[in-house]
Amino acid sequence: MTASPQVSAGDETELLAAFDAVIERHERIEPRDWMPERYRSTLVRQIAQHAHSEIIGMQPEGNWIARAPSLRRKAILLAKVQDEAGHGLYLYSACETLGVSRDELTRMLIEGRQKYSSIFNYPTLSYADVGTIGWLVDGAAICNQVPLCRTSYGPYGRAMIRVCKEESFHQRQGYELLATMMRGTDEQRAMVQESVDRFWWPALMMFGPPDADSPNTEQSMAWGIKRDTNDELRQKFVDMSVPQAKALGVTFPDPALVWDEDRGHHDFGQPDWDEFTQVVKGGGPCNAQRIAHRARAWDDGAWVREAATAFAQADA
Ligand code: BYC
Image (cartoon, rainbow, N blue to C red; front, side):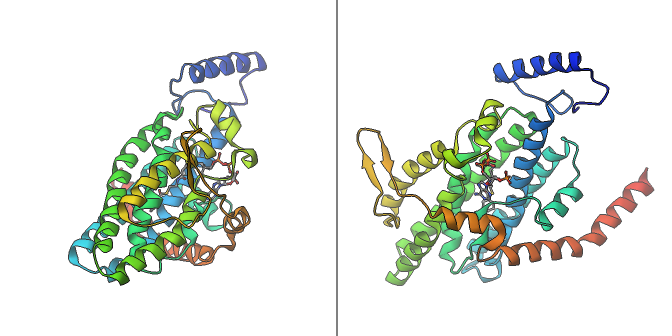
């Protein structure tokens, strides 16, 4: 339950102290617990953005389902894209526990009042992109989402557990696809490298702006919504990906990428943050196409929602 107008200032101080104590003990806030309005709105913003990313994220890979090179690849890709739909649904349900309906959330996405991950505004130009998305995009998602299993809001953390298990399969299928192509012809190897070159920097942008330019990180860390900062997770992703690239036989397009013995981490260059800002503001290569497709799918599905509502009412 959120702060109600009947709660007096004295009560609110007590409620806030109880809330802070739960956060301090790393326990969970549940939907019926009192919570500060800003905690609730921050969660709605992040969970909705996360849900929208899963649903919009079906499009770049969905683009290749009808052109998969074999029945096996098609079955894998279909299953993966359907999993993403499932992730969106768990996350919309988690968001609904905060008092906002899925209809409202979808409207906010379509009207540009809520965001989705920048990564899905880039096109998928070859089948190698299906592998690269699995390896790097789902890989980045895992880095970001495993700590979210311990987020302070119960329904979000519980949704993340299943999402992470499925993302783990997604990453492996991507890596396996790329490894298969790397054992193929020179042309296939070149396709993989070209795809990795296009996706590397956008994958690093998935973690959000540098900590110094991230307006939300400090408060979200204090509330236990985020467990690591954007830069910490980006570093973890780079450290994890470099040996995988080596095993695969591809390189990343970053001359500054070197192992730093003293830090025990890789040093790396910065993505083009102006490009990131442009993409987040709606000016990426595929923003308009992604939203137009989502709006069309929402309109096309109106009869299903109406029929389901009528059926539920008839049954009641
Ligand atoms: N793209 O203060 P910051 C998947 C926004 S899908 C767009 O650091 P925060 C998959 C940010 O919202 C997985 N916008 O924010 C699916 C904020 O703007 P607002 C998607 C971004 O929230 C299909 C502003 O920039 N994962 O795996 O503390 C196929 C300042 O940022 C981005 C999630 O959604 C971005 N990359 O931290 C394959 C993870 N980065 O809202 C795979 C959940 C930042 O104030 N989300 N912005 O107007 C999070 O962990 C956090 O929200 C973020 C950003 C780390 C992304």
